[in-house]
Amino acid sequence: MNASIYKALVRAAAVSSLTWLCASSAVAADITLKAITYMPPSKFEDSMAVFKSWIEKVKEQSGGKVDIKIVGGPEVFPVNDQVNAGSKGLVDIVLTFTAHAPAVPEVETIFLSKVTPQQERENGYTDLFDKAHHKINMKYIGRASTNSGFYIFSRKPIHSLADFKGMKIRSHTGYNPFFKSLGANPVGIGISEIYGALERGLVDAAPYNLFVHDMGIAEVTKYVLDDPFWKAHTTMILMNKQKFDSLPADAQKALIDAQIENEAEMAGIVAEMKAQERKKLEEAGITFTKLSDAEAKEWERLSVDVRFDDLKDKLPPEQLAKIKTMLMGE
Image (cartoon, rainbow, N blue to C red):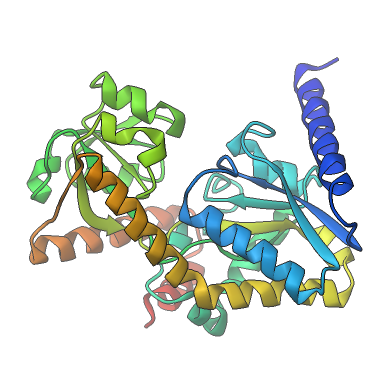
């Protein structure tokens, strides 16, 4: 048997087993949906908390008729395979980020937004983003975080953009254009390898969201640049489109209404969790540094402009201009 097919069957069996166990330990709902997450479900992180809040709201909105079970994280399907698993119907719902950008280049715009999730629904961006996913049989439910962003954790303090020149920084294809514009040297390293790369000095710094205390990052860095970029964040909730379309209208409405309700509370959830995480990091010995006001503005401008420039070869000019107008609130 082909090895890749064998692995897929094993993973599908694992999902089925986990689903059976979940279903047998709770009161049966009319509709049970299987969800998978890009991080371990137990991780303390804003997107996971927002996702779990949405799940509870779906149950409330549906009067208990729709139940969403998280069957696992990257141990069931690797992060880069999760959206594909959702597309094929091996799971119904995926909490993910921009790992599927090669298939849906529009996802590389989600973190550039300067408007609220509510405004994105009003100006048409949410609908555009949803339709972009239909070609891979996925439906965009909505964001899983906002007002969050990415921080630079470093072995030495960063006080100026000049400090990035020559810096070895953990990166991937999404970060590369931005870091290169600062004169840094991007080094391709996966999330699971960040700790080891910093510990061994393979990189001087690494970007990540603020929630790194349980990853041990405070053990291998001493500083964090307190000027987050891409504050709108990259995380999202996707669902198998065929599955969504097969649901009764009231169940579909519950899924979307729960998301809209969640979006009104999302910023508050994120702010509270970030305050808790910051306290943990400071108590662990991390020092927060900042750029000057002028450089902070340049930092934010570059983080957005460089990414839009990079998308010129990936999206039609008219579509890119339309998206930029929507996300910049112009």
